[in-house]
Image (cartoon, rainbow, N blue to C red):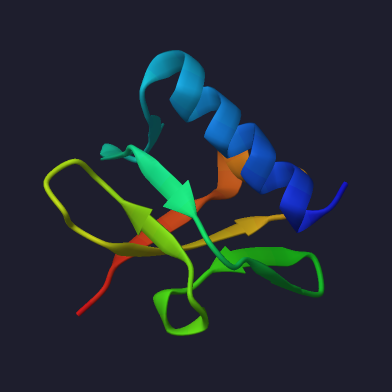
Length: 78
């Protein structure tokens, strides 16, 4: 499993269901650069990634590679 495969799964879920929801946060857009450090995948705005909801709130996302559905955290960007 790779971070790129995880992102493809997230995008497929958004395409099918309209969003990825984690801990009460619904994001409708995931695109751009993703990266991996150890077993942690992340999408960070500073690195060119976009994770956002329909209201335009942008987030940084982090997750355990291969287990994003249970471990993803979304942190609003300041």
